[in-house]
Amino acid sequence: MHPAYSIIFFTVSSGAGFGVLAALGLAAFLGLTPQGGLYWAGFVIGFGLSMAGLVSSTFHLGHPERAWRALSQWRSSWLSREGVLAIVALALAGAFALSLLMGGQGRLLGLLTAAFSLITVYSTSMIYAQLKTVQRWCQPLTPVVFLCFSLAGGALIYAFLAQVFAGGAGLLPTVAALLVFLAWGAKLGWWRRGDTAPVLSTPESATGLGAMGKVRMLEAPHTGGNYLLKEMGHKIGRKHQAKLRQIALVLGGIVPVFATLFASWGLWPGLFLLLAVLAFLGGLLAERWLFFAEAEHSVMTYYTRA
Amino acid sequence: MTSLPASTGVKLGLVIDLDTCVGCHACVISCKEWNTGGYGSALADADAYGDAPLGAFLNRVHTFEVKPEEGPAAVVHFPKSCLHCDDAPCVTVCPTGASYKRVEDGIVLVNEDACIGCGLCAWACPYGAREMDPVEKVMKKCTLCVDRIYNENIVEEDRIPSCVRTCPAGARHFGDLNDPASAVSELVAARGGFDLMPEQGTGPVNKYLPPRPRTPEPVPHLPDLADLAADARETRAEGFFGWLDRALERL
Image (cartoon, rainbow over all chains, first blue to last red; front, side, top):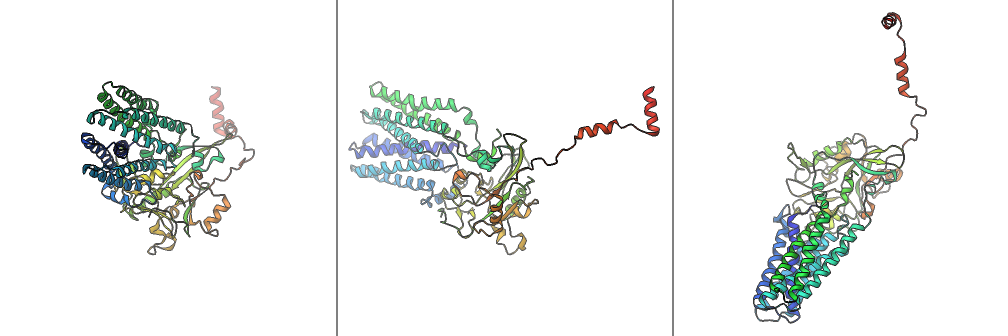
């Protein structure tokens, strides 16, 4: 599948942003009300990342001016649900932020903000996980991976902010390291499943000619390019698959885990937590680029020359 | 609403005969021509006369080689357009309601004024039946020539999809596949019509008829044409040219 920059940025940024909002909400629910610099930086980053992601997602549309129409089909469409839920989550987060500002504890609103932030991330993942045509995406681990990365990103950023503004992150770096570890565990399982699952559609099933023999394309239906090949025939990513997976795992997994552990041992905690956050987000951009680039669509069975 | 109708009374669709199709692409061109002037915005091309032309088509003809375990391979021309699926995944993923399946005849259409051009329906279609218009930036797909088949301003024999009307080989058939007595349903039953990618669970309405099996030995004991040619060459010339030939050889 074609890795569109706007969609890669959207899923990474809004995933991390809703992760931060969920962390703020959960902190308040547990009675650890975010205050002062932590409050302001937390909400600015949480709203900033999630909204920047959502705005970016409209950049790949043919008609962004009609984007509001996408809120209408929540009964059947995950993309529509994602839009509606994002607005609900952001509205709840706004009410939550306001209630904290007015001196409230924000326990219930915090819990609701966290819940709807995570449901939004879940519905983002379901836009991809629902597609039977892209076998690598259509597996139960896809939402798990998206949710774990969102939680891990939120925990990392929240730990860094707590270190800088609240004078210490306490157990947060350890929790974040654990979540990063879990997320990459899920991701490795997701890769393994995607690499080993038997192929659902073949040139034989696509043409119905399997009974006659082995099918391959002799002549393409056109001499030029077409939308399908541009959108679903992307091959560059798969060429560097192994290298990109290593880059994603080292940047997004190994560096953040070690950096947060150093931080939790009191070794330049601010610096190492910042390193963890930046490496994690960088690794996630590589991971998300691959998420699209290495996914193969069933329509390509009609273009198989081998 | 992008929820699918529970059932449609009529299921209009195409039956494509892979035994008859000669791969001339006339259906592709007639489809492009009709749909550029008909329903919705023009079916556009980008850089049509440049180095990298790219256009939207609703119907394309692939050509496949089918190689059995033993014996020579077969060449099969394979027209492909929207299959107007019963369980169309392209419709349910649409966030705006622009994609819909008609209750009255089962045709899957796009309301271009409501389409935001997100492309998710093209990702959801396993067959590659939907293409983004490179100029209008809305999704295009086969309409089963909805602006022909009910059109009382054209003569009755033209009230079938453009591709069916054009096919010079008679490889394309149009009708109600929900009616077991219709000509298309009888054709499907007689020839063993099949679905494309049944494993995707889309329930396509369009059916494909398989190529008929080859005649095992078309002409028994065909004389070797190379031998016949050799005999002809060996024939001796008579008369004046015969004398000339012999005289020159002796020289």
